[in-house]
Image (cartoon, rainbow over all chains, first blue to last red):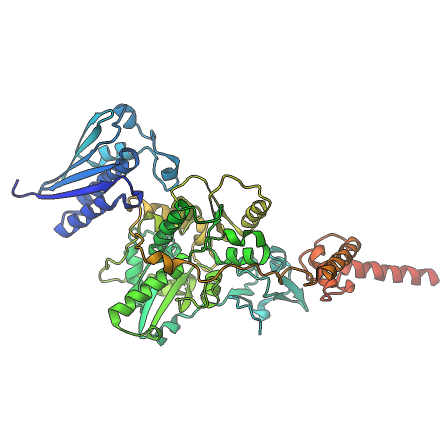
Amino acid sequence: MSNAIHLHYEVSGEDFTRAGEASGAVKKRLKSLGFNSDAIRRVAIAMYEAEINMVIHADGGYCDVDIYPDRIEILLADHGPGIADVDKAMQEGFSTAPDNVRNLGFGAGMGLPNIKKYTDEMRIETTIGVGTNLYLTVKVA
Amino acid sequence: MSKYFHSVELKADLCCGCTNCLKRCPTEAIRVHGGKAKILSERCIDCGECIRICPHHAKTAHSTTFDEIKKYKYRVAIPAPALFGQFNHLDNIDIVLTGLKKIGFDSVFEVSRGAELVSEATRKLIKENKLKKPIISSACPAVVRLIKIRFPELCNNVMPLKAPMEVSAKIARQEAREATGLPDEDIGVFFITPCPAKVTEVHSPNYAEKSAVNGAIAISKIYPELTHAMDHLDEVETIAHSGLMGIGWATSGGEAAAMLGDKYLAADGIENVIRVLEELEDDHIRDVEFIELNACSGGCVGGVLTVENPYVAQARIHTLRKYMPVSMNHLEERQLDMMMWENELEYDADIFRLDEDIVKAMSMMAEMEEILSGLPGLDCGSCGAPTCRAMAEDMVRGKAKESDCIHRLKAKIQNVYDQLKNTI
């Protein structure tokens, strides 16, 4: 796609303190490209939630972001344990996050529901013991 | 001239000699004589409780005036993270940092950056098993001073890492030197402080001979000018480089959560802090690796030099932290050495003990118990000491006499009156 900007980020599962850097970098890019603030906010929040999930639950992975004039497409892929029950994971308040990250404010169980709320399209592909791919699309008005 | 510098001081003309601060001081460092309160400087830990409680506003905190910055060619502001919770409808901390530049600082380095480095250094030291457990945070100077004068067994548990303010000052100073080529004496680094304890720490640090900070300006003093500047910014600069871990240090529990462990304890409020330290001293606290202690309720947002209610500020900090990256500052190899304390925390035995000579101290103690048994036990404060026990100690040290106790005096007068009555 010639009119797309492609960004790739490796997300470390080792260093929890780096979580949120990828989505932060994308937010900066979108700001300098001049996208409207509503679209930027939606992408920032959705990608942040997904990135944190990837670090907390899946030991990291990578993100591929494609920026088009009318939409932003994001793939977050990991080789983590996979999501056992996707319907349950989509429930507000359900979380399997460990205590130490709950103390920092994570693990409220709103990650996947928030992602769904802020994106126009969300698709989860997951296999137990293999990994999870999360495909997100945010349309720009 | 006392050898102890204190930020907390009394405005004698406003003091009416009531018992409010006297009763509230956690180290019993106040006496009321001649109708005025007096702070025993060797016992004062600058916690600010007396400032909080005084209904006549006679207790105050001395801090650096804003005009001091003009003495320096290059001025750096290092704001405490508690500052970010002081504003209504703030969604971007760059507005605060740009505002600081607008009122006269050349550059700004927020202390939450240093906080993230201290958190990482602490996690590293814990992992390498280099610290005596449980580790007590050294961030709150009032707590460090309290341990130094009252808890000898716990001095070795205090984390020998400089607090975020000092770490941030060192890095900011180095960056300023590199950017301007100016010598140290032309660079002024100023902490924007929520409390008097930090003002004292800048003047007389526990961890080194001298602090890299030149002065501490109270949030409450700078607030009007700063909010005005923030409301009239032409553009907002991108200065902030902090994550939710660093910002979280502003509230109680934030520092401990950044340890990424789950065996921690966070206590706030000086009475609660004392309770925890006493339990720790008695070895009643097991299974805890890290202890965060804040003299002020709510954490640093509860400092007495802030403008906002600590719990409102706490809620705002919580909102600001949402969707921030976890940490934006990462430790470089050589940095850890620069962050360690330059000396050890030594217990100051002179403050509370009755006498250097243990035999003399024991006889004084016995005398004290005897005097105490003769006192009414009301802890009323009328004699000018906070409790009857403190009064008995003052009497044994020769600092007070029995007639200072109005109940004893009244009993004596009653005696004389009864005798006279019988002779008439």
